Length: 51
Image (cartoon, rainbow, N blue to C red; front, side, top):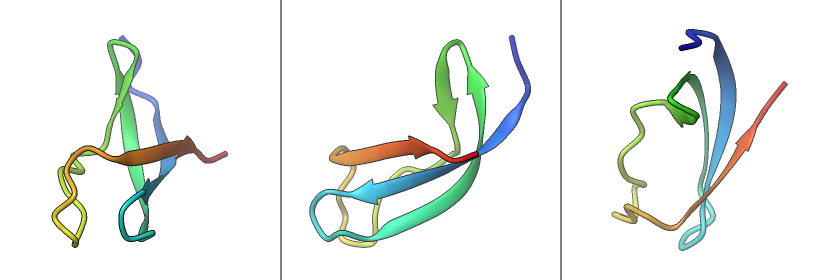
């Protein structure tokens, strides 16, 4: 298991809000602790890994 942390950008598909967070990779998925957008959207997001 890798404990490397990277920046990720999370884009809300409903309101267009963008969040830049640090995330760690666990079991092939990136976990940042992000749960919900300010518009209460909980599952319609685009996630992009930043360098």
